[in-house]
Image 1 (cartoon, rainbow, N blue to C red):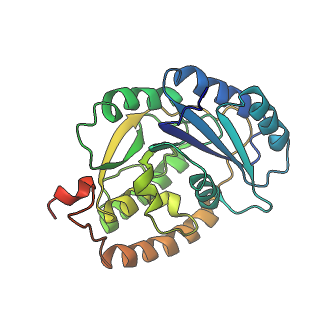
Image 2 (image 1 turned 90 degrees about the horizontal axis):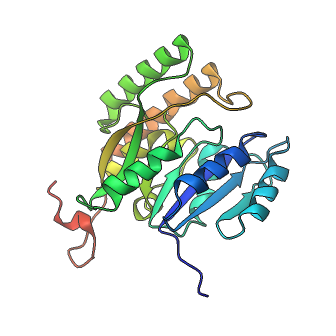
Length: 253
């Protein structure tokens, strides 16, 4: 029997997510039943039992789960880039490995937006959390950062800190790579000539473990990255040839 080519690739980076792996992957398989999909798991050199749990998952779901392990820790954007090299689906669903993103939102958006394909120029569907399970300080920090970024980049997104992103694989593979690029996916996709759409998604409590992000480190890196993004966006976008079978060819500037 010929192997079915997936239409959707679920890409999940993991770093020290012991206890979250089997529940998350079980939920993904339950919710996406009926869609040809695969799950690409990237272990970013975890030092807990994440590697063992991913090996068990690959054995449990040999037809859908593939695991790739970094030899040294490289960060979330690098983990996503590693996974992008391996995905086979037309669309890539990015989910965080802590269980906060709800795969049920993937199913809903797949059925209501992707399958009807009413706008073939959509390059990314970015999640906007309808409720936040963070502290008041983290909520304020995110609100200010999103406001500054949106003012500077005009990226049509209000919550880029949300890990839930459904991206057209073609669009994703056109993006320039740099560390922390995952914080700027809507701006990068828009720069490449694709439409950005934002949809409300569920935000849940982390199941196990602790957040890997610190305030000061993220603040310092975020300022530098934002300055770089301002420069990049102002350098212009991509050329689209009329002869290409590309939905962007009919888009007015």
